[in-house]
Length: 213
Image 1 (cartoon, rainbow, N blue to C red):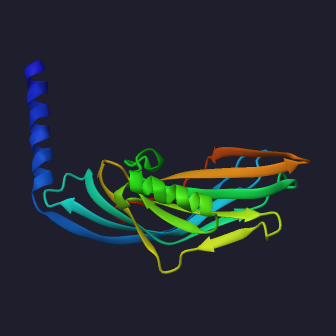
Image 2 (image 1 turned 90 degrees about the vertical axis):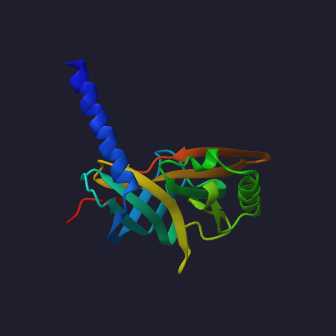
Image 3 (image 1 turned 45 degrees about the horizontal axis):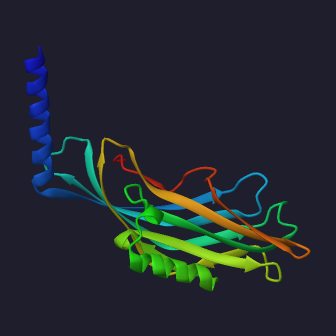
């Protein structure tokens, strides 16, 4: 019995290898619009990312029905901040989102050059887009002060950010990973405090259906 299981596994492995090395078939480009909101109860600020997610798909000519190579691109992204009930005594809010392929833990895989660019953008404040993970991830960021309009929208019109190439095995969707961060600075008298945290998206929407219509 074990011999038959081993033989079946070997055959499956051979078929998989063949499917990966033979020429591929282009399955077309699909674009979806996404809007994702990240917030946390008791925290000042609700962060929203939106834009178009464009996917180019290829499959092996020997189609096993389970393998898809996807190349993802973020198009015309928008980053927005909305106030919440917990923003009454806030002096500054710095916020952003990292969009990346799931295989890239962007904030943990910065090169020295990327880290320097990221830190410089953070310290300069204002609107910035920083490319990380050797060009496969992007951080969108901004900040606002209490003397400025709190609710802000930043857009990168006519911009395209590559989000990498992934081999998807037997999955109906491909999703970009998102990580939202927020820094809130408050003052009371002479005391100044800054609280940093990561926000979880309310619903993950940076996904695209890979199942043929």
